Structure formats: C-alpha cells, structure tokens
Image 1: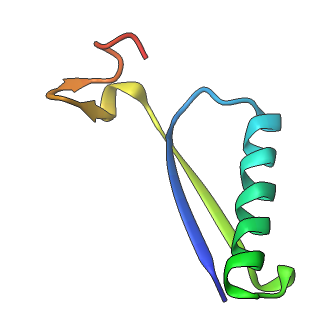
Image 2: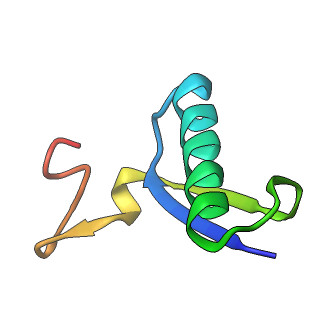
Length: 63
C-alpha cells in the first residue's frame, strides 16, 4: 500500500488540495503499478510561523 505524506504551508484551497491528492495518487499508481484503492495520501498543513526557510520563518519571509 503506497502512502504519500505531504507537508505544505497552510493556506491552500480545498480544490488545490483535492488536485494534489488526485495527481499524487495517479503518479503512484503509474510509478509502482499500484491499484488506486490501495493508495493513501496525507496532507499536513503547517502554519507559516512553524516553517523555516534559510534561517527564517516562512511568515517572516512573507509566505
């Protein structure tokens, strides 16, 4: 059972997250010949203040 865990800074729309889940599922099915029913995708949304980029928070960098 393929399992993809994706971390993103919060703020994406439900439609964007649905698209990520659909496309990642399709990619895993194609890459490892897995049946679609066995693929799992988890999106974890992280506040910008908890995401670090080059020594700063994403929030401080304007993300």
